[in-house]
Length: 438
Ligand code: 5CA
Image 1 (cartoon, protein in one colour):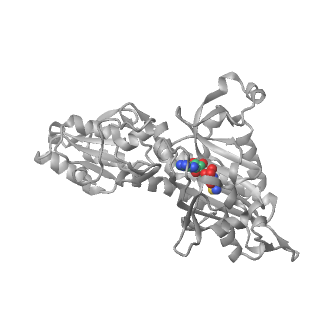
Image 2: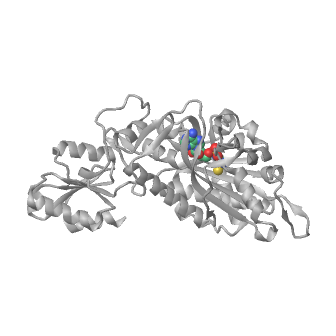
C-alpha cells in the first residue's frame, strides 16, 4: 500500500477519550475509529490485523478437527425461550422487533442457535463427535463500554461448540481445545496463561480463562512462572489419545494459576517465592464444558447405540478476536508506539523514502515495493524524515527499510528491527530476503 494514497490516518496527539495505551495507540495509528459508544469501524490497517488474528485462530481450530460455519448475527427470540435464557440474560441482550412484531435479538453468543442447528441435522450417535465454530460479530450492551475494542458492545468473537456422546469424550474434546488455545496465543506472539474460572451465564462445571498479562487488565492474576516457559508449538501430545490428553491437561493445570475471583492463599503459598508471578491480565479466551445443559433444555437428542435417546454433551470455546488486537498492543508496545509481533502485523515492513523525487531513492523504493505490494507499506509522502520515522514507530511495523540518497548510491538501505531498535546497512536483496523470510 502506498501511504500517500491510503486511508491510514495517524494522529500526533493523544485522543482525550482514550484511557489505556492500546486504545490510544489504535486511534493514533489509524487502526480504528469509534462510530457509537462501544462500536468501532476498522480501517484498512486495523482490518488486516483482525484478519491475521482470525486466520491463525482458524488454522488452529481446523487443526483439532473443528469445522467452520457462519451463523447470522440476528437470532430469533424463540430459540432463547426454548433454553430458558431469554429472560435470564438481562439488559446486556439487545432485543429487536421486526415489522411483523416478531422478537429478534443481536446474538451475544450462539449456544442456542448451534444446538438447534445440530438437532435439525444429527440424529444418531454415529455422527458424533462434532465441533463447529464461526468467527462472527457479537453484541453485548455492556453497562460501561470502555478501553476501546477491549470492552466493546459490538465485538468479533470466535466461538466453537462441541457435541460428544459421553462425558469422557467431551472432556477429551475440551482438552484438545485447551491445547489449540495455547498454540493459538503463542503463534499470535503473546503468552496467555490458562486459569480455572467461574462459568457465569454460560453455565457448566469446568471452565478455563486465558489471560494475557498487562498492567491495565481487568483481573488480578496469580500464577506459577512454570506456565510461561513451555513451548506449546513443540508439544508432542497425541491428540487422538485420551490418556495422552489427560497427562497434558494435568501438566498444564497443576501449576498454580488463578484470577483474583478464584484465588486461594494456601495454594499460592505452596508456590516457591521465586516462581510466584502476580499482576493483572486481560481475558482473551474462555472455554466451558457444560454437559447436557442446552441439549436437555432444548430437547435435542440423538439415538444411542442401544436405541435409546441421548442428550449429547456440549462445550463452548470463545476467543475475543477484536479484543486480542488491543490486548496484543497492551503486551507489545513502547513509548514510541506499537511493536507488532510478526504474525499479526498489518505490513511486514515500511519502506521509508527519505528523499522523494531523488531518482535513485525512488527507483530503489519502487523496486522493493513492487516485489510484494501486500506486505509493504511504502511511505512515499512528501514529509520530513522525522515525521516518517515517528509514524513508522507509531504504527509498529516489524521492519523499517530506510532508503536515503547516500546509501542508495552504493545500492544499500538501512534495515531497522522495530522490536530491538537494531539497525544494519545491507544490500537491497539482503533486506528483501530478511524481511520476507519469516
Ligand atoms: N459462548 C461462550 C464461549 S464461545 C462465551 O460467550 N464466552 S465469553 O463470554 O467468555 O466470551 C468469549 C470471549 O469474548 C472472552 O474471553 C473475551 O475475550 C471476548 N469478549 C467478551 N465480552 C467482550 C466485550 N464486551 N468486548 C470485547 N471482547 C469481549
